[in-house]
Length: 93
Image 1 (cartoon, helix red, strand yellow):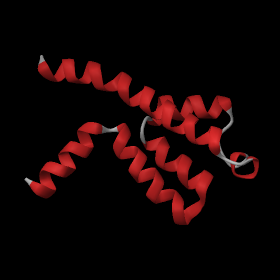
Image 2 (spheres, rainbow, N blue to C red):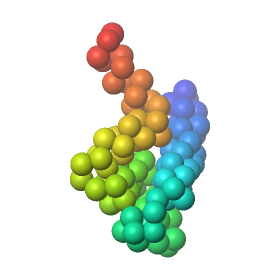
Image 3 (cartoon, rainbow, N blue to C red):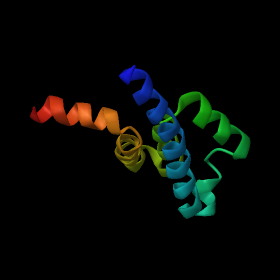
């Protein structure tokens, strides 16, 4: 029963955090980089289909192959607190 409760709380957080992070970044991008990102329809589909994984793809598309993966990985860990906690426990625990 606890697993179901955790899932019921984390799924909405995953989608809302993903939507917020990508929207926040898209508002700050210059027009030439924004043109490489998703349009409104594909953005919604990516968030619903892939969840936090689309954060990494967005930052690679919007910021390029050098800076994008680092930003995307960092923001993905913010969007997935349970994964971040698991990594920290395995690394330091």
